[in-house]
Image (cartoon, rainbow, N blue to C red; front, side):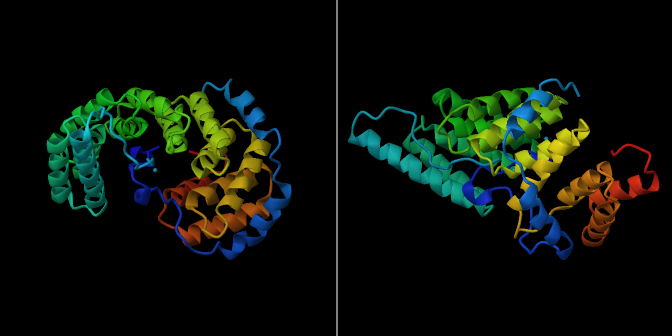
Length: 313
């Protein structure tokens, strides 16, 4: 799995959008309707967890409501705190528009107003990471660390730092930050942190830990699309076809009206093949090759069609 599947967005307007907005293809209309009737929610999480624990085999979102970490002792400090908050908020808006120089100037003003305002350091890390040059990527690390040092309960900074660490391929360190953010009840980005934790464990080739993280995400939000999709692949890898099919059925219902991705089409093809449903497999194969001929999933399907006896890669 490529690093870019660890979500890089930290702001609510930059959340991951894995699927384009269009109506589901006609070929899947009946499939989606049929799956509603056979979705079996009860006991699924327990069954999944039991199996994933014995296995030995990865887009970051979070709240943008920053709160100051420095104590406020008088109205003068309060005014400085408010100035820092507003400047940091403005910087976030500039970053969303990729106006990075303007964002830098706002953050310098935030630091001038309050040199201990943790969210400004976090946002500077985000800014430097987005600019992306080797020198600025190196600098970003210190800003994320400073934000966390100023406010140990700043979960968003930990989530953002985890994304940075993943980009730098420091996966073990990233997992530590995602675990802290994902365990913080009440944090609005907690589910995203757990999704990122699962994908980070996949980068570390720890499928069992990844499955547990995705199940925690589902426990917190049954509509977690990332957790659904990743768990289907994990279950297919374990040949737990019926459980994978039930979770896949739920996934189709979640994406109804949004369209279907090539990854979901390929999962449907694998499930149809595993259950001997050649008609369904052929139908979904035609749809994948027609709608997404240049996708990695289409290439994978073509490879398998040329050698059906070989395992899926």
